Image (cartoon, rainbow, N blue to C red; front, side, top):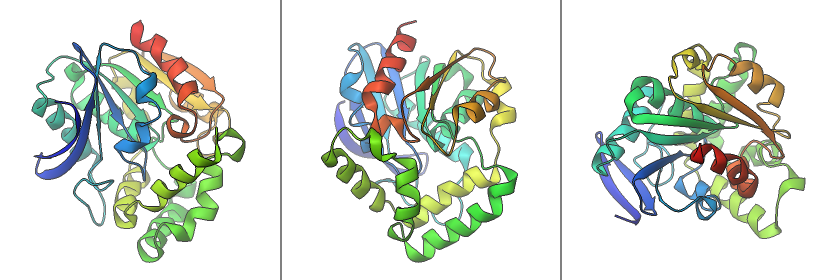
Length: 263
């Protein structure tokens, strides 16, 4: 099975894509407000011999929408159900970007036999206690006013201007972000407000690569280094990237990720 298609898995409609062939599986879990298209720039840079699986999280992209608050266990179960659908039984490499890293961590702790390696790209593993009330107000505003109402405040910080390879890449990423479902965005953001994944990291049983963006204001290298130190088998690297590195700087991410895949 290759290309983009749909299926009903774990009780919800899911859009997913499979690229490449091979005995090894690589699962890519996108960021808050993203979709499987968030990985379009990275996939061609990954080595042959991998079966690369991408999907739209429940509440995002063209998968079934969610209102209110989403559930991290359900999102992890969705990934496991997708692997079942594709007949992928052995351990896969799971790569999560930003909020997708929270899903990947929960997948690794909920189904440890299914994750052989883990890569967290600019991981968002929870909202600090002092920022939670502001974050709740933000989710409420997104639901009321839509994505565009916050674009000027969010996008320049999430995508630092100096890192764009071209004006076309910037325009495409901006349009994708603006096209996200605001209620689904809020429902998934509430996962980060309501949970702190850092205590869970000590239970991750597989080798884990953490990639921090030097220009990421949401998760600075210093904060991510301290926040992920409990990972038992951690490698850590700081890259010349922003918060959504896999979209804005896919070559930088690939250069760090490919050696980890080959270890």
